[in-house]
Image 1 (cartoon, rainbow, N blue to C red):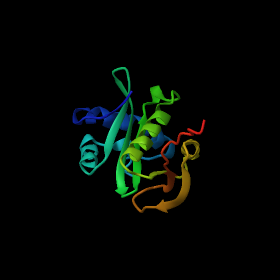
Image 2: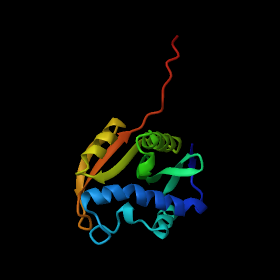
Image 3: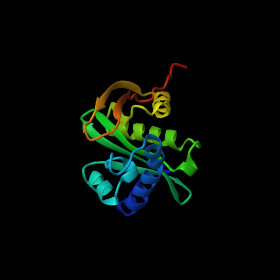
Image 4: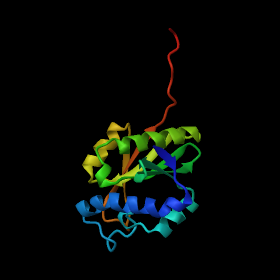
Amino acid sequence: MIHPLAHDTLSAAADVIRQSFRTVADEFGLTPENCPSHPAFLSEAHLQAQVDAGLQLSGYFAGDVLGGVVGIKRESPGAFSIEKLAVLPAYRHRRFGAKLMTFACEEILRLGGEKACIGIVDENTVLKQWYARQGFVITGTKRFPCLPFTVCVMEKVLKHPTVDDTY
């Protein structure tokens, strides 16, 4: 089940995010020295600061275990970013990520959003393909002097489900 995360679960959420993003950091050679802002190196204090700045975290629970996390943050009146989408390696390939993504998009719609935005490591082609299957399209790339990789920006226009009641 997916639930909003309470303040007392931030430590567990930070741990899930670190463990989940560690595989990406290892694959792309990211370290605390060359990419200190990467989620693999996220401190609980930094996550708390992000929550204080408007990041809304929710978690996927497998029984009593927090197996995945997703955050959304309003960027402009109609647009939200989806951040910190993380699934523990032991829980991958069970559709936790897709369920967290669906939850995040539904929550964005509920809050009046029309567009979801993400930023990922451009060289991570597997992840880009996964997001494309979730309905995201590439809108550009960006270079930041503080990052040792190019960021791929992807967006998804969100629509409320429609019901055909003509029958």
